[in-house]
Length: 543
Image (cartoon, rainbow, N blue to C red; front, side, top):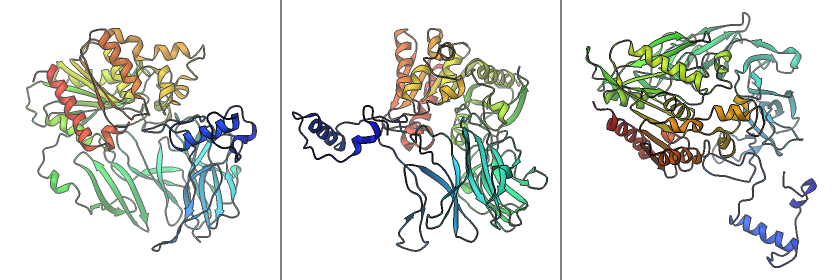
């Protein structure tokens, strides 16, 4: 615990003092404890006090439980203490469990960024650490079918990083680690029955295919299409089942053989509904930026496209900044199709700093959130316009979270857009450091903290609020009222500044909405945000 003025957590000892606001110090303390217990005061001493929708001074821990697969079974805790565990996997004989966690007894849990791998008996006894090192994370342990091998991922505590896939003997040591190089973020590790392959999915170049890594050759084979996304999958013998997202259908379940061949759709969640709809299909394009990085982008024509006509266009930008968009990404499926159905061209892509293109591409926006990514997204738009059907006098730009930031940056440096929209964005990095639960983006991307002399000018330079006087584009700003990932003060500072400057701006708050408002939030509010955005664009872009 980190309560100032009390050594060795002595404040946690039971007190016999009665609660009395007019009493002694001990009696006042007892009174204050009652206030905290009755939620009349929220006392905060921890570092990470912002959750997604509220603040909390309480420390939460996650533990491993085991429960019999039968009705009314009672779960039994296998781990204990002031630690956090997860990602459990049984050994094949069912006698042991391997899991990851943070178990550093010298640090407050909010400060322990490393994670280790552990093994224990299924009654929680004989807990042992398998792997752990300062500044490193070890995660996603999966035991091979024979119980001989352990697959896992390892990386640095900074999340601007691509964790490495590795294997080692289950009862080996760090000296026995074998790395299996694959420069993408991997998920869903799964051994083949003969232990010759490890299957996984990975965001890559706009899709999220399933791959299998051959252990002996250390080479990965792609099993599913590049322009589709596999959000979850499983292997059993020579059969694979998976959930696939693609432009022609956002979600269905498929079955194939273990090599991804002979795929058959076995669900009908959206298929029949879509058979009665007209969709816009994206066309993929690329260019090489000034850093020598290949940037991919996609162009979607309006659903009612007619050759020879020019159409208004929306430049749509993703957040993160390490997210990735493409035909295999599901979160924007409905939004993109809606904008196309409303008569707009949609241009989207993956500027430097995006995931899905390896570590060098991911880290290409370190100390450069504004100018570099702006160059990439505007180049995408400029090149798309060369196809001749984009009306460059009727352009709009939109994006959420980091992309809300980038929209503000763009319209404070470029005047081509007739309307702009930012959702749940970040506009002043120094303030964001204090009010957002994603505050570690600041030290991870800019090398330090707002008060440090070498960092302060970088944070100021990279904050769109510094350039607010240059914003003249009609602008609509959204924020969920309970969003603590980026914090509503960000939008309020930007909105108030623009109102004082007399600019054309509208501010929309969604009561109860969190940072996930436009993805998994209240359906009526999600619809409101999408309709309100297109209505705002239509005000300033005459069709």
